[in-house]
Image 1: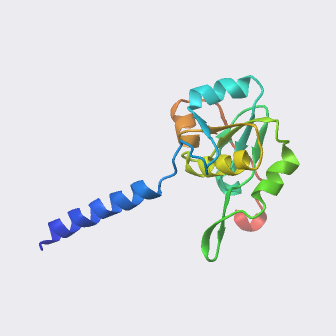
Image 2: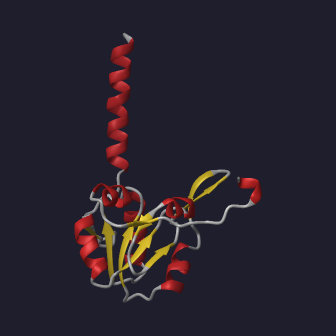
Amino acid sequence: MDSLHVIKSFLLLLLIIVSIDLPRTTSSNSEPKVITIDVSQAQKLLDSGYTFLDVRTVEEFEEGHVDSEKVFNVPYWLYSPQGQEINPNFLKHVSSLCNQTNHLVVGCKSGVRSLYATKVLVSSGFKNVKNMDGGYIAWVDKRFPVKVEHKELKYDEL
């Protein structure tokens, strides 16, 4: 086999693996029903009083996030020496900030983490939760309002 054929075969296999592993927005009997909305719909809901739950890391959130009246940051994934893992306190932390009847829009960088997080919330009894498709990237692409958290620099960070 020539190297071009090997590369093509590898890319085809990779595409098959990725497509199988992608989360689905449809629901089956075993999966909770997740409603996914685009960023324009999300902005309208946030303007009407929904709370935005940003599930990116604290560092990502501080670099810039959706600017809305009610915004919380609770990371869904954490980074550890072993790699990326689900935040074991995610549901507990969200439950301490919101009740199960609050109206939430859940977002992340691209829409993948937020889909997983939304599934967890819906399956745990949260009633009014929407996943924001496209995440922060799509929000910024639409030039919707963003906010950057300013942190104080320590002398050794200068």
